[in-house]
Amino acid sequence: MEKRSSRSPLKGGGMILAAAWTVLFLAGCVGSEDTSSPASQITINSPAAIAQRSAANYNNNVNGLITGATLKRWKDDWLNQRPAGISGKLVILQVSAGPAGAEYVMPNGTNVLTYLSPGSEWIQTRSNGVISTQSMVPDGASMDALLQKYAIDPHNDMIVVAMGTGSTGNAMGQGRVWYALRYWGVAAKNLALLNGSNDWQVTNASMVAGDFTVTASTPPGNGTASVRTLLEDNTALQATVEDMLAVLPATDTNVLNDGVFIWDARSVSQYSAGEDNGAGAPVADYMTTFQNSGSRQGHPRGALQLDFTNMLVSTEGWRYKNRADLQAYLDGNVSGAGFIDGTYQGVGAGNAYQPGDVIYTYCETTFRAMITGVASAVILGKPTRFYDGAMVEWNSLSYLQDATGNYILPIDSPWRTDSVSFFRAADDLNKIGTRVITDAYAAHADAIVSADRAYKVSGGASSGGGGSVLPPNPCGG
Image (cartoon, one colour):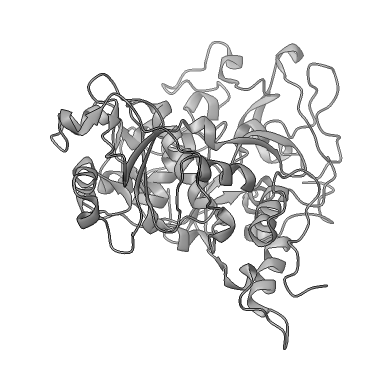
């Protein structure tokens, strides 16, 4: 990009703030390190360390993706069946009620609780220092409020996130809850997703009708936990626009030896900005592919497309496909439904994911990408980052006019993404929404991650917003 050299992000997604944070924790203060401080105890996890590989038989999992058979065993005899390392309650968060006869997994009112917790609770509009974006990971105060609402002890409880009614939207919401908890440091051993809808657990004989009730538990609102006590820094799950700009290839091709795999989880028609409807023909009105009143549609260069729905079995409660089937997609070995590139042709076997790649996945608001990311990070064990700002943010960072006739970004802003994308601009200014630009010339776009890290150390506000600031130095100064 022109005029970005003096403030461009570091290659590979490493940020100046992240480097300073790491040095701060690892080095401490010569002769005066306080090993009791939160900063000195936090483990900073890479995407590879955050990922977990599922057993081929999902029945054998005790975290990550679990089956109804495992959940039934737990809820029927929790004190004797709970997994090793878990000493607290079984807390089931359903993003929706299930269908009639399978509304809520049966709680016992003491150590097995089932709460209705929609995915919309686990998102927030926040600014990364450049632009304000909807549907971002919640800040620290909001996460604490949710832990306290449901009286979750994130150190000792087992948290299971369930869809309730099977649908793509509820699978997305399920992923958003998992993502928020994992991002803020809930350990993998304390977190699971129920594979498939409530009623499908009955259909496949993992559970029976008596395992469900019509009423959820009432949130007690008396919890005391805080994410500040979680000593894992999993903020690497979130890829900022700064990180995305740092890893894009020079052309609109998937470079096989660069350690990066960019996964567009949307439809072919959105990826192609209407040039291909998924069947080799153009969309009659390409503006129908636009979402969120965007200024343009298309994709970052180097991204490959595979629709998120390919990860799920729609006829079986929208459960995740078997691990081997998901791996075949990444290997490019699925004929007729595999990854495509900017030519809208399948890339073919061996030309998709490469061993060691870090996956960067996104959609419009990183709801659909929760499903692709769960497949890659929770089932296949691949290092995965979610571009949380997604296309609602990416397509806004343009030298294009909005409905007021003003340019969203000035021509010399270092955060213009139109110059590193394939795109088609909106054909009617009245269809473009107004974007809230925080600072078109910000030095960095990591204000959310910076604020969240600071919250864990100091308990300060973590809403995101202003320019990037380093977390307080635990050594003083």
